[in-house]
Image (cartoon, rainbow, N blue to C red; front, side, top):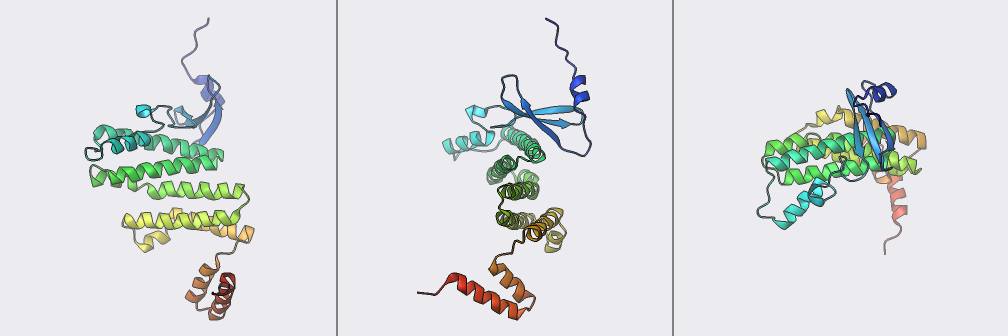
Length: 249
């Protein structure tokens, strides 16, 4: 039997790296299971599609977060995030980041939402049990970025289900969460108006509203009419809202 070559020349020749682009694909493992591959500079990553991206079972659990939650449940008073646990948390953050961007690149939006939710839950757990505030802040600074990915994926998943109204709601809710995250980080209102994530989501929302003729909720239209001193329109909107609510009993 000929010796299998150890180099990756053929793989790299067939699948070149594209600078500045996220290049991912789905393929099959030796046992037929579906796996993700992410082409990166100087190499290729292979990730599992379920559970932890590296396929490990920390302490017999599907993820390290699941393992930590069990450890905390078993010993709440003595539980702490020591150096070893902090390193493992960081590993899981990085793994889920790579798989999240791979899902986004492939248009697998529900999977991207699920991986973003896992990262946010791991972030919540880390901040709650942090050994020191600096370590928590190191992760919390990325919360707006993870939320940005999540909002995009959730909105696009809603569009795939032919529900543009739900997509707009996902964007509106997500923008509020991003703003709250920034405020907790000490951002000023002026900074939020120029933030790239909020600007891009705002453009996405307006594009959907125009393309699909999606109107904002009546209560929001009323607030905007009052703020811009369009009192006749505000009165009309109040009547419409009263009509939706029906008579009082």
